[in-house]
Length: 141
Image 1 (cartoon, rainbow, N blue to C red):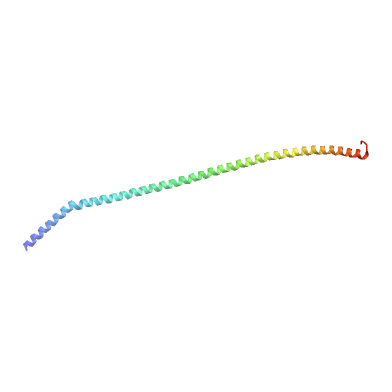
Image 2: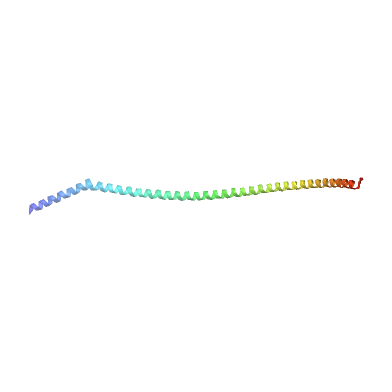
């Protein structure tokens, strides 16, 4: 029985020495690598979260600037559009005034020409009536 006990203790001592050797050679470096890996992953996740938050902030800022630029562009467009309408109204008004002046001038010219034509017609009518009277009566009137 003593032999079994010595063999048992010998096996137990070998097992303990092997555990210590494996712990030093294999398990501690493996745990260190796993811990580094975990820290790297958590650091990368943290960096990714920070970058995503930063990107979200930049996107919101971009959208705000874009909306502001659209509002400014719409305001500028409306201002220019209104100025164009005002200029168009002024031009139309000026052209209407010119057209009215030309129409009044043409009416006056027509009235003067009509009056002149009436005068010419009266003179011609008088001449013609005198000629007709002279021919009918056979003497000058």
